Image (cartoon, rainbow, N blue to C red; front, side, top):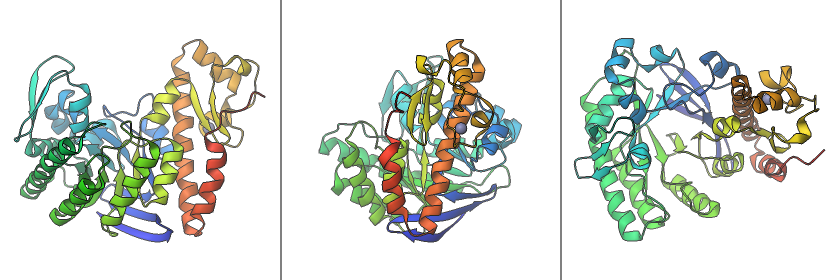
Length: 376
Ligand SMILES: [Zn+2]
């Protein structure tokens, strides 16, 4: 993997990541395809709306369909018919958020499947092997996503374990080889809750182990946004210039713009797709709920200036009708539009960085991004 920073504007960076499945531009937003599918969309839809990399999830793919199926299919790219880059998260977060029973041990985390109650053990080594079977271009280390709030002592002990696991992941990565002929890469994850001292220790230790990129984890878990931005800025000061930085699971359009301003290169979040399936649309003049009665006779496009497939072809009244009638096409069109909006936002951010005017552009966007669309 090769990462090149083309231009900076303040701390904001415009770059390109090259993988064996092609390049993606940064700042990048990765649509979330937890189960090997971005819900309601085909790979064709994803390419058309401008996605260059998608995220999938180790925990879910390990439990279902399982690594034997993925190996037989020649890896996740072939299985889901997506020929561009894939990043997989390690499953640590899902073990802690989904499984009914989990026990953290030095060796790894023991958990009960949320699907059938069966018991499993994720060790750092096992998680690397599963991601070898998936064949993701970028894999993540096993970590404990420290819950919020956590006291400093817990956060410190949790981070120490995450660092020992990160080293074991790195060693297992170096001992094993890709299964399908394309190169794989591995990112470390900075933890440490909202404590600057622990975050600093985490970032320095990961950099000394050495990874292809670095993620900032354990944020957007309930802490105030300002606290998140301070931690992001601190981590990015400590992480190397030459490697991509990935803020996990974040977030709203405003969060993305603020994090880019503090040097983040990559994002993922379920928000555009999940909110879309709940009838909430992001537009360039704010957010709207398409099921509102005011749209019943509204024959304008969802967002008149948007060039996505949904906005070029369908009216607000039609999309409202689809949602009210519980037609599945509504979920697809809303997902297409919201993901296109996120990709548009990243394209515009990249242009603003190239022009050296990111901060002015950001202020302009923030002045209306958070508004509810007025009752017109
Ligand atoms: Zn649109």
